[in-house]
Amino acid sequence: MKNIVILISGEGSNMAAIVRAAEEGRWTERFGARVAAVLSNRPEAAGLVFAREHGIATAAMSHKDFATREAFDAALAAAIEPHAPALVVLAGFMRILTPGFVERYAGRLINIHPSLLPAFPGLNTHQRAIEAGCRVAGATVHQVTVELDHGPILDQAVVPVLADDTPATLAERVLTQEHRLYPRAIEGWLRRG
Ligand code: GAR
Image 1 (cartoon, helix red, strand yellow):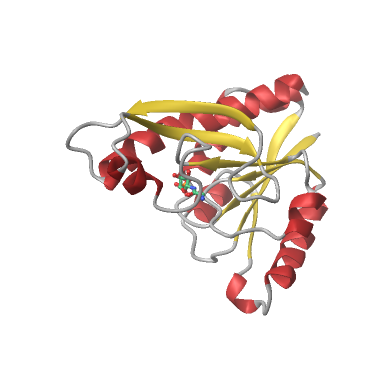
Image 2 (spheres, rainbow, N blue to C red):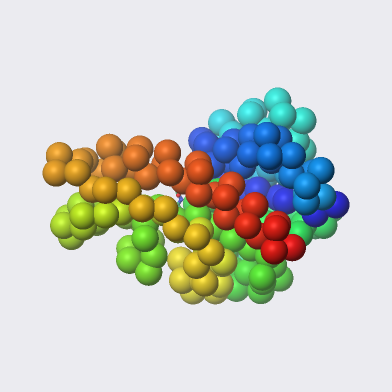
């Protein structure tokens, strides 16, 4: 079985879209794959409830309980390892991972970022896209490498930026597309197998 482990920090709407796509797209029957666990660095993350309701193992560990990034990442890896993941999926996981963690999961660690990379790595992507006068914005699924938001691109979705957009309205339009993009990118990864 190809186990997928998803890391979240908050709402988890991308994680929910992936879980629904796995169920509706019969990923277990077609690809021998399943979402095995959802882990969060925020115990109060709303997405954990959704995951449990779908019969998925969950765990939460607060990064605030660890003195260093290395210690937190070691605990995170210890929670991931029992699931022997074929793929580790960052879905709104708002922690920068240490090089040691990234190297451990090299080639099987992916992220979704709310911009058309390589434009606007980092935070406040929608505000920066509007301020720059971009006519299009979007989201990118990419492999995670040590350099933040810079790994090889797997897939992208594009949306228009409208004249009266605020960062919130643009974020909503992009997020709707993220929910199609991320399952599609993972299905492509599974198909290539
Ligand atoms: C998504 O828009 C995702 O692209 C973004 O956080 C949101 C999470 O939403 N990720 C990043 O900004 C990563 N740097 P969700 O928790 O509802 O999936």
